[in-house]
Amino acid sequence: MNRRKFIDFFLGGSLVGTIIAFLYPTIRYILPTKQTEPVVKKITAAKVGELAPNTSKIFKFGTSPGILIFTPDGELKAFSGICTHLTCTVIYESDTGTILCPCHNGRFDLNGNVISGPPPTPLEPYNVEISGEDIIVSKKS
Amino acid sequence: MKKLLQNIYSYLDSRFMLSGLMEFAKKKKVPEHKHSFWYYFGGICLFLFILQVLTGILLLLYYTPSVDAAHESIKYIMSQVKFGWLIRSVHSWSANILIGAIFIHMFSAFFLKAYRPPRELTWITGFFLLLIFLAFGFSGYLLPWNELSFFATQVGTDIAGTIPLIGKHIKTFILGGPEVSGATISRFFWLHIGILPLLTVIILGIHVLLVQVLGMSKPIGIPESEVKEVPFFPNFILKDSLGWMIILALIGVLCVFFPWETGQKADPFAATPLGIKPEWYFTFMFTTLKIVPSHIFSVEGEVLAIFAFIIGGILLMLVPFLDRNAAKERRSPVFSLIGWIVVLYILVMTALTYLLP
Image 1 (cartoon, one colour):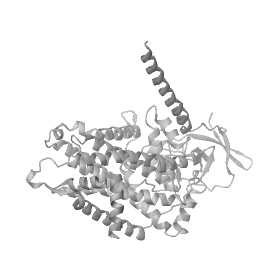
Image 2: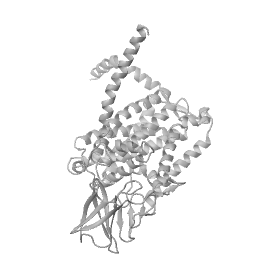
Image 3: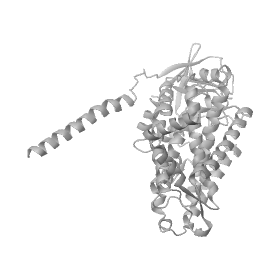
Image 4: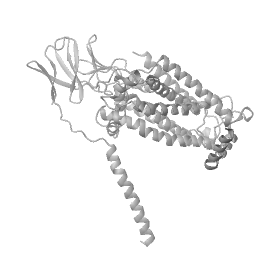
């Protein structure tokens, strides 16, 4: 390597190094930092007697919504409130007894299975148990 | 007074070479023919962009980009600030008309085959401007933090999330986390008033420079005898400004009779409201995703539909290189037919959005 080539390499390398020294912190600054929130596995979704038959409630399950349904048969069911199509929050339609995603008309039965519309997979079901006055919803392990 | 103005002009002229610019504007000719009407939409887009910048700067004075204050600050602008309702309505209405004008401008350039050489880069920069303005619309829609915009953002970013391999990373980057939150509003604000305007100035600058350097294209097949040439200044500019005044009057009427809504404050833990729709310019994609089956040949329908839109977009961008007939100054009816099918598809899907339950 002659002197000219060495200087070209040295200056070129310094330029690349300078660009990287600017870009790396900028890119790391722009990328979102990972938030370490406690993973919620169990939550009190409602109080006993809060829901009338054939009604529902959206509750906060960690950072996502869940849906608790008191079916016309008197059964309590809970699912993830996030539609498996494009993550809109679902609602319970009491007149049809089904769960509807209002964004793209995806419809689920009371077991969370897809009846119609574009959702590709069922809603994630949760366990429901009653402890004293509380209706406890937990993730299925 | 006249002498003072002359002195000011000659002072500026000797420093900025204004007479050279004036000469250029006077010498520059614009073709005039039976399709000339469509040329004015480019100028209308530019005018509406300027309006966006001016009203956007004014809105910055009172708007606060945070989950707790965004919706309240919009309500404050609409109800307390003098003429706040007008400034915000002009911003929102002109944004929507701007997207419409960009679509008209793009499709008129498409059907007049204005993309053919040497104007390929004019077309490609125009295509990127369309994407940038759709991003402006999408990011601006969330800023009032109302329930419609919240769920539209959730759906829109989840569409990005379905892109194989990189989708989840893109979604997290756009949202600033796993879901729509305070970090999202900060990021959308940063995009809306920082990154996108910067990109627009650069790409729009290239686009306008190319139009000035290469001139406006003449449609294929129009005999030379039917094409007149008129001076850019003052003839074309005067007609252009007439179009701007008409658009301004239309925006004024719309703002007075239909001031832009504030909506209900977004609640991330509320059910999605019934009948939710995105802004009209995204509805053709929205309805496609609504009617597409959950699985097509064992592939998720939504993934296939999104993939089709991406491929369609890339083909649209590359059309100057695909249409070999137009490049040789020959008619290309196949491309026109495809264009009409796309226009019809967009119109039908948009109409279905408002007609389907």
